Image (cartoon, rainbow, N blue to C red; front, side, top):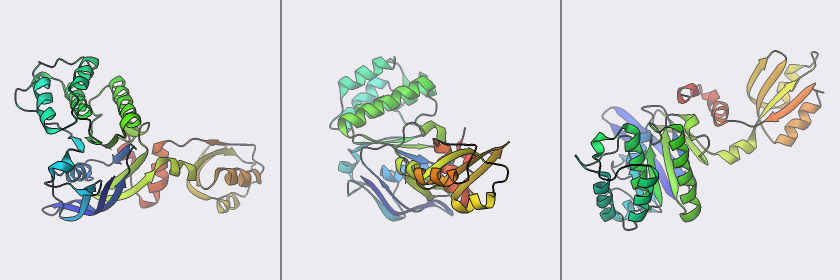
Length: 300
């Protein structure tokens, strides 16, 4: 488990991370969402022990991270721009990480390189951005660490490769209790993989929720009501987070229990009513709309 308590980090007058308290559970995919400058990379660098917090603490399985080599063996950090030694090859980087991580799996590295159709003896500086991202992921998975920190890791991967990486993550989670922490500015990129999502805004944590719990508590209702319906009465019956109307069809995002929502709406004798699944985008709009946060910045 990764725990941050009152974590803060500033660079001069710029407060990059501001009093963040956050728990990342084992065996689940945690998505860290935030626009550029929200503090995602700074948070991951503190979690990886690259930066020392100004205030607060961050621990991995109860152990401090900064200047603690034993703790750092438990995670692999893929930065937004992964560093490779000058003029090095994938095979050379693999040999380096094999010395760093005690459970590094060289055979897995070879298999993944073959699966991704990457040449182990080719100079990395001749790789495209996407190929470098693939290599970073291969090295990270071969390290066989308990945690992996991914900073914009899917940026630069094509859709097919993206799904392949997500499948590898899912397989490792099932087989060895692997826990990926994925930072991204793109909400849709993480929608089909994350179990829990944290939203960073101006260095602070705006929201951290288990998606299953959120989806059990928030519902989207499509309905067509009789013309004479008292809409004020309808609104008083529900905790409506978002309301929209197109033609005669109302769409409500409502907090509450699904069965109770349907029972109440049926009291108004709707001409049509049904519940629809919520997307991750809609959940965040619902949860953050009252704060005035522009969720559209995450959608690209």
